[in-house]
Length: 207
Image 1: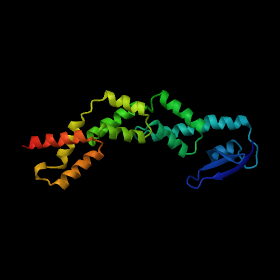
Image 2: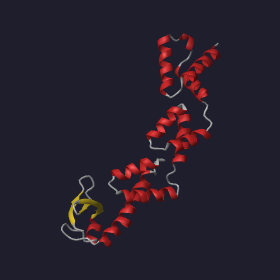
Image 3: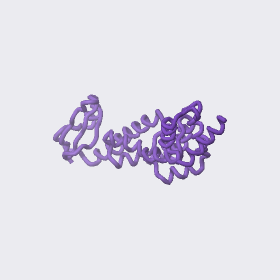
Image 4: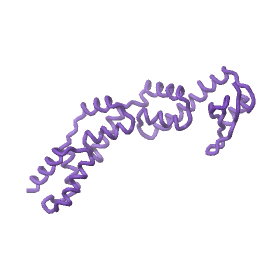
């Protein structure tokens, strides 16, 4: 195995990208480059290469992942994507994910529960819309359905609450304004029957 290039990173000058046999291998700080005697044109023993990958690079990836999830909960897919974007190899990413899941730093089921509760509290959505949003974040369909099934979601009550926030009196609104409100609820994922029932409930309440 031959080191074919050692290049300083433009966006992070304190780190250097090391290429082995023409392919990117890993990035290290200058002190580690010097310590491991990584110089362009030199051979690198497999034992040394494996140690760097399995210990130093793994710790780097683990630190990146923990920093990323330190701000808020993330899905498994989001963490994986972040690590791949940072240039970590698949085997390193998978090892980090095993660690995170083992100690429950990432848990898609808990993520779903927290996400849905926050959505319903701040900006309600129908189950359909919640499912679509969680899919986009990489959560498995089976996990989403499992969480939705055990949560108490009052779609009609939420639709009524949204409708009441958007208008004072429905009877004072023209058809164009009512269609706009209807479309607003549709974009939140509510079905036709729920929206009709919500309109009827609000109108009856106004009377």
